[in-house]
Amino acid sequence: MSEGRRPERVAELLVRELSEMLIRDLKDPRLKGVTLTGARMTDDLRRGRVFFSHLEGSERAPAVIAGFKSASGFIRREIGRSLALRHTPEIEFEFDAGPERAARINALLKDSRAKG
View: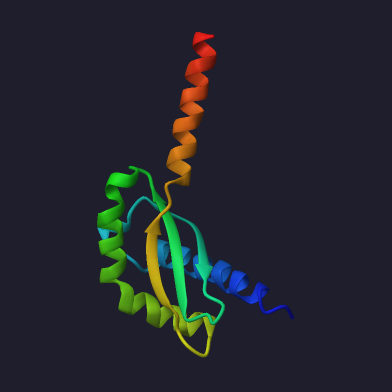
């Protein structure tokens, strides 16, 4: 088993578990409209960074991060139980501007085609 592949698998599991938590457990209104776009784990699996986007765009990112921080104890406990890792990772949340940027580029391309 390649050690470089394990952080990727754990990151995928982390996103899956957090997605389920967003649907069934996390009732904070600041977390409504959030889509998890990916995650990265350190090689030792002690830290993870989860990327998200929001339906309303980047202006909601600070509120969403505050919502995740508010629920961080619950999130860590549930992640520790479900992933059964030796150490429960510290999780940071970061806004992913990629989907927002892609939508803007598509709109610009559509506009330029309509003019040309």
